Length: 399
Image (cartoon, rainbow, N blue to C red; front, side, top):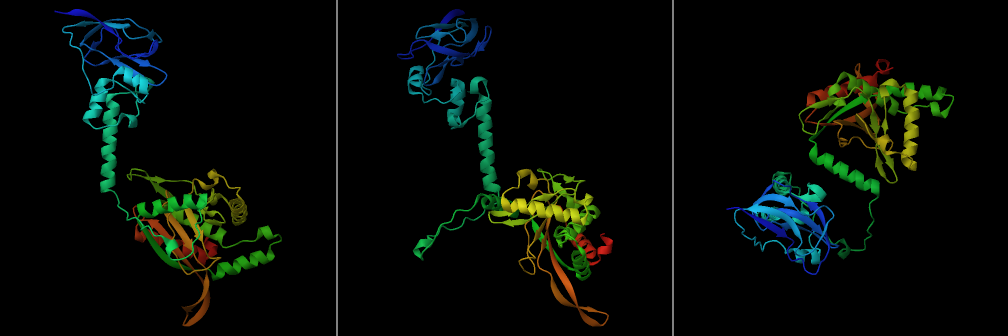
């Protein structure tokens, strides 16, 4: 036999006139024992008022913003049996409102699920009204936690560096890394461990190019009209990207597709006092040698004087790292993700090259092409670098 039960606000301690901030049921709703009916909020905390009966909501006796105290009627339920809830597993309303320890909105059913799954509800972000935590929120939190543990277990386990007290061996000085150095370090570390690197080496005979460049510079009226090797490298690389478009691509995040780019923006590594920067020169295919040289000077100056902007270092398709002004015979540059290749340029040197039955001195430029082996295979890398070397060796094919 069904009866009508008037549900009242239970003992909430010394609190009076506590505001109703949420009504969680509507007339006609079927509620189970301990389902939340309304939410109260004091100055310190909020608390759901659970139903002491199972039944059907016949009437709502409060409104949003109503002020209630112990004994205030809140709903009328039609019930089959008036079994009063007794759940020691969640705080009594009076204790919750006094302590302010509850930093979340969650009903008894949600709390029960959280206890069963050993979930700290303070760590769960609620998606319900006013940030209320639902059972779906708890389940998603558990699934995410399991996935994280799985990734940690199955992922690449990098050995940690040992902690060494260097001070016990002698005098030391601790020097904080600069902001750009820390950013570069994170990016380089990420790229090195996530990209399967391979580096291909080849030599370009730039004897004729260097002769052309010197004649051009001797005839230049203005210092700004002079050319370095870099503009020629830019043009040769663009030619290579056009002929082998896979190198002008990026791998999508899922690793399922290649994103082929129809533009040609080339980055150049710039050494600054604050660390390594890689500004980008855009639309290199549409610019001549003098235009590239002028933009290089401008962007290098900005990089070294702090005038470079974030957008000046975005959108690159390929990067050049030129250490020729410092020295070296070869090195392995790290791919600048999401690009798939980078060209390393050491110092050119005179070498004896055997031609027509004799050794003759030629200016040889060693080149290092590092690439992402997921996208570029060895044969393709060899063809690309051979093409670049061919253009640098015979600039008539480039100009």
